[in-house]
Every structure is written in structure tokens, then in C-alpha cells.
Amino acid sequence: MRSAVLLAVLLLQMGAFAGERVGVGDSRDGYESVTFTTDSRALTGTDGRAADLLTLVGNPPLGLPQVPVPETNPITESKIALGRKLFFDRRLSGNGTLSCAMCHVPEQGFTQNELMTSVGVEGRFIKRNAPALYNVGYRERLFHDGRENTLETQIWSPLLAFNEMANPSVGSVLERLEGAADYAGLFEAAFGRGPTMETLGMALAAYERALLSADSAFDRWHFAGDAHAMGESARRGFEVFNAAGCGSCHLVAEDHAHFTDELFHNTGVGYYQLVVRDRKVRKMMLAPGVEVDVKVDAFAPQVSDAGRYEATGKPQDRWKYRTPSLRNVAVTAPYMHDGSLATLADVVIHYNNGGVPHQGLDPRIRSLGLSERQASDLVAFLESLTGSNIDRLAEDARSTVIGDF
Image 1: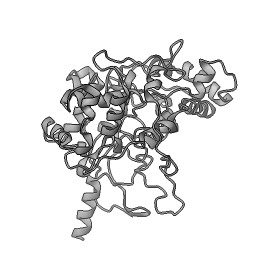
Image 2: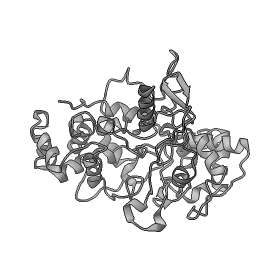
Image 3: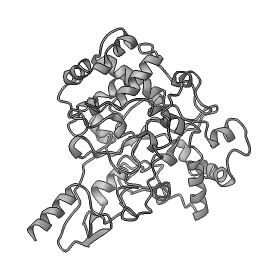
Image 4: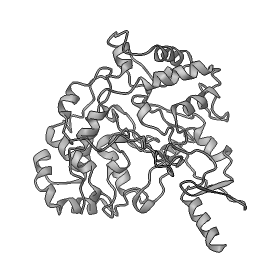
């Protein structure tokens, strides 16, 4: 009996409770079946052919403007190649087991479709969903709480975080790279000097700025005037999108669309998870397909996440999170800062219901009164925002060798 209780406590600490659907993969629905299929695009069949990302930066896909590039870090082929190599190198983590790409999986929309929140070194808990990296070069603030404002500096947050890549210091990362034979001359070729805190960030930034994806069905219909590019349901969904006020945060300009206002809003999700959600565990999954009733009072762990407040310390920023872009949203589930909404339909339901009323809720969050057909059309519109080159970007990503000891 004692061992069973200890197992239950361990599973609770790991978040392995089955009282609710928590994410596309976290639910483990169907894992026990031989017919289970992943949502991830397949690795098999790709020849790992590099794309001309430098040309892509100079000529963004339909629907995107010119990507801003700092004068201090002009993009070159050598920087992109070095950044791609670093992105897939497990040696950038403290124990050599975790790369950037293991939380930002190219075949899963440069996020993780099968985890509600990411997992760090040694299985350490991370409380937020991995943001998708498509078009990240346009973002004015980075991370869900906006604590960084340049791609050149943002990498050091996950590199040094104990629960992410867990490096003990900046120097330890650079020393590891300096001692790696396969990096000999690469930093010098790209920057004229060896690996430093600055050049490592600049290389990764160059690669990430090149992850541009647009030319979606919506872009071809809205910006190129192709009347047949987008289906009737999606066209009705765009009307719903505008009538419901979605476009006030997810902006569409005259000649391009970022589908974000780059600001921070309280949509009720953070408040719900901390204050309202019933955390009592009634069923527990011991293994895929093996579920038991919980006979004692047990509660899922409570995670404190105050959003933008954690970056600014301002009370008015509590439970506010950065407005994500909607581009490629159909391939970047699960949703919200904590991955708590598994599908686009779940997201529409959340907003249609008016979120969770409380002090500080954004005044634009209100009951929308959408019919079942309108909700379905809105999802169809969101599905029309998938860029034409997402498979090509994933193939390019696999053109590099995964760094390992």
C-alpha cells in the first residue's frame, strides 16, 4: 500500500493525472493502441536538404513585410549555418542531453505538439508552453512574459535556467564550444572572432530570423486576390474574426499581417489556472490505457504564473501574456501560455464563453454568442493561416548534424 501511495505522489508531481484533457499528447489518448498516430510530421523520407534561407530573408513570403535586421548583426549564410548547428546541439545544455530543437521541434511547428509544457534537463518541470518560432524575427518582445527584447540576448535565459538547459555559467558554455573540434573556425568565419556570449547569441538569432513562413491560403486570397485560394467556410470565418473583435489584438494591416499587436493581455487563463480550477484528482493514469480511481484526497500541483508581472513587477501586469501571432496556428497546438487548450475548437470555446470574469480581465474578453456554424467557420479561417513552406523549413532544419558528445 505504501509503495502505491508513493507512486501516486510521484505521478502527481510529474503531472500524470487524468482528471482532464490537458494537451494533445499529455492526455495519452490512444497510446495503448497499435493504431495510434502522432500529430508530428514524419522524419522519415526527408533528405535533409538545406534551403536558401538568406534569400528567404531578403524576399519574405506573401503576407509578410521585410524582416527587421539589426545593423550590428547583418545576416549571412555562414551565420545562418552556424546558428542552425547550434540550435540542434545538445552540448549547449549542462549535461549534454538537451538542444533548443528538442523544445522547438521543426516537425511540430517549432514548438511541441505532444507536450502541454516543455521538459527541461533531467525531466525538470517548465511551467510554460514552448512558443512557436515561425516569424519570430518580427517580435518586439520575446517569451510569454516579454522579458527579453532581442533575439541576440534571449538565448541566455533558457541556457542558464536551472529547469531548462541548466548551464552553471556563461563561461562553461563557451568553454565547451571552444573545445569542440567540429566548431573549429566556424565562429571565426562568421564573425571574425571565436565564440563569445555575443557571437553565440548573434548566430542563433540569424538562424531564427530566417524562419519565415507565410504565403498561406489566406494570404493568397486576401493579399493576392485569388478568389479560389480560400474555401467558403474560411471566408465566412474571416468575417466572424472581424465582427467578434479578434482583429483588435491579432492585427491585419493593409499589405501584410502579423496577427498580433505585440502587446500583453489578460484573457483569464492564468487566473483560472491559479484561482478557479478544480485541482482535485479523481482518476489517475498509471500507464497508457491503465487508469484507476483515486480513493483519497489528492490534488494536482498548483503552479504560480503571474505572466507579465514576473518581468515588470507591476500589479497591473498580473496574468497578462504576449499576444501570439496566429500564423501557422493550426500546426502549433496546444495553445495559451500553459498549453492548457488542446485544440483550436477549445480556444474558440474559451473566447466564446467570455473567458473567466475577474478584476483585470481585458475588457474585450466577453461572451461572443457565436453559433456552432460560426465557431466552425472561425476554426476554418485559423486553419487557412498555415504557410506554404513549413515542410521546407523542417527539411532545412534536418540538414545539420545533431551535436552530441
